[in-house]
Length: 269
Ligand SMILES: [Fe+2]
Ligand SMILES: [Fe+2]
Image (cartoon, rainbow, N blue to C red):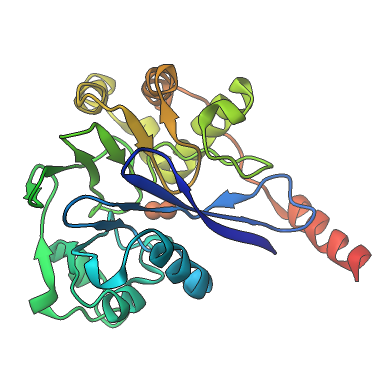
């Protein structure tokens, strides 16, 4: 598995913690990104995968003093978003974990969070972090019932968790680094895989949910599994999101693809 992790500045205040993983021989890799916001009370958004622990801590610490981090916002409890949550709680000693009751319940036996170090914020609620307010929104597509994407009302920065995922053959930071057709196909396929029930939803109700995101006033849309969207790429991502329920389901890689990965390992050995 080829992998790297590094901080990349994406706004005057925000660094993407970009992590990219790819099996040799696999046609695509996957990002496992998180984000740091250097607001007056600095915020870490999601905590990456456990195998990145040392690199993740080093990347976060390179852009913000660990003792200064005040908030650890977790979008949902999937292991690619909470992989270093226990480490973060230990190393970012002054941070409060922004989670929810349901997320905490779903982590029982996996990560036991100290109630004194938590704040429960559900979708539809907001969090005052001193110099700005973060608002929390259930996205139209999600793979955990706890999911909230997070919007910085002062700058338009949106940390979307899984929303906006687009796998590709290369690591990318910005959407214009991916061919538009490749990005579109990957976006639609990926969102269908994240929420395979999406073809069953009432489209009018679904579009209303998309409108809520479209009307937030997003200026920078950063996320875990793909590029950062800015400018016209935000409008395009919203347009792609609107089309997911009606799109034909894309078959996932299967045994033949696994055989190809194994064959490449044998060749490399
Ligand atoms: Fe997820
Ligand atoms: Fe994820």
